[in-house]
Image (cartoon, rainbow, N blue to C red; front, side, top):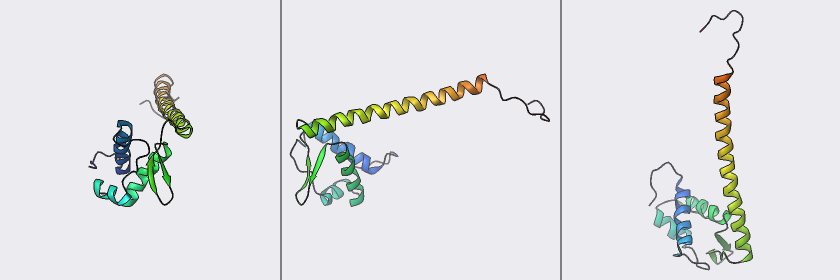
Length: 126
C-alpha cells in the first residue's frame, strides 16, 4: 500500500485512514484496527503506524481510550466541532505561510532585478 512517492509512509497511512473516516467506511465510534493489524495491512513498523495515528489524533479525527483502543471521533460532539474548527484554522495558517513564503521569494527576485549591488572599488566590470 505504501508507495515510493517521497511522501513519508506515516502520512500516506494517515491519508488513507482519513479518507476512510471521511468517506464513512470508518464511522464515528468505530474502533480503528490494532497497531499490529495496521502494520500488516501497510507492511510497516509499529512506529510508522503510531506516527500516523498521532497525526489523526492531532487533527481531532480519532480519540484514544486507555485500555480500549483508538476510536473515530464523533464530529457532531462539542469536542469534535472544536477540533474541526481548529483543524480548519490550522489549514488556513498553512496556506497563509505558503503564500507569505511565495511573496518573500517574489520580492527578493524583484529587489535583485531592480537594485544592482554597487561595484566595489578595485573590481572590474562584469
